[in-house]
Amino acid sequence: MANHKSSVKRVRQIKARTLRNRYAAKTMRNALKKIRISTNNDEVKELFPKVCSMLDKLAKRNVIHKNKAGNLKSKLAKRVNTLSA
Image (tube, rainbow, N blue to C red):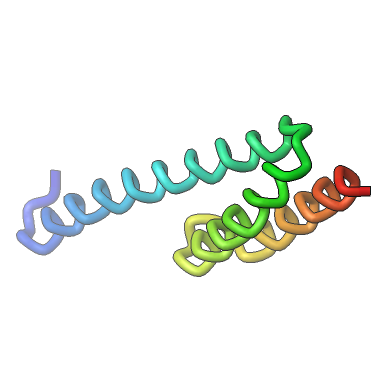
């Protein structure tokens, strides 16, 4: 364990941040899974903007990379469009 006051505080902050990021990433993965397995067109169209917004926020906070967010949104958009067609 660190000896300096500032490094002890840093360890506390990192733990809290890690928990927050882990929760956000898990929530994102569950939402993605829900869209992928759903066959209900109305449900998917309702969830798609919320998940896109979630991906953007996570990318902004550096939980996931911005390119990963873009790739996931692109794949989801394809899925939504194939369901509606």
